[in-house]
Image 1 (tube, rainbow, N blue to C red):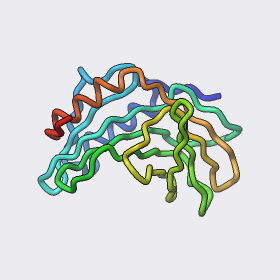
Image 2 (tube, rainbow, N blue to C red):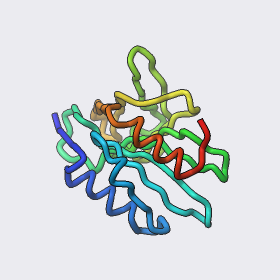
Image 3 (cartoon, rainbow, N blue to C red):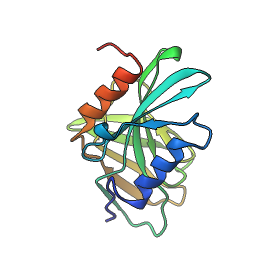
Image 4 (cartoon, helix red, strand yellow):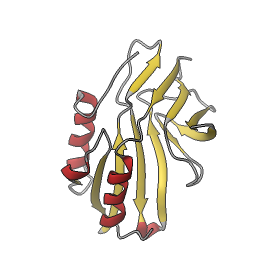
Length: 163
């Protein structure tokens, strides 16, 4: 079992990447950082991109080495792309596999490419993600939704998404 939280080196690493590295200078709203979910915004080709991100509250799996793990929900209003759920696994997924996202009793299959997984539509939210690495290691990541609503409201406001 591997525990990560908003003060973990992995989460802080995401914050550093979001503030620079070609993102156009992502802005972080400290007031939206609640219980692990943080809201971010930056300009991409002059258009706003807003997202919330969190590291898992708990990770299970028999892995010896794993990179950063995050769940993200992204808005790109200029592309009419809202509520895109994605997952950074911290390892390359097994080729031609899928990741499974579980919310309560509902399950959604995510398509995968390299270290990322995406929901095929905007009907999925997040709590548990199961995946298999390219080495065959099964992993389970648990995400708390506590604090998600406040961070989500912040990106809706920043990207002027009406709900």
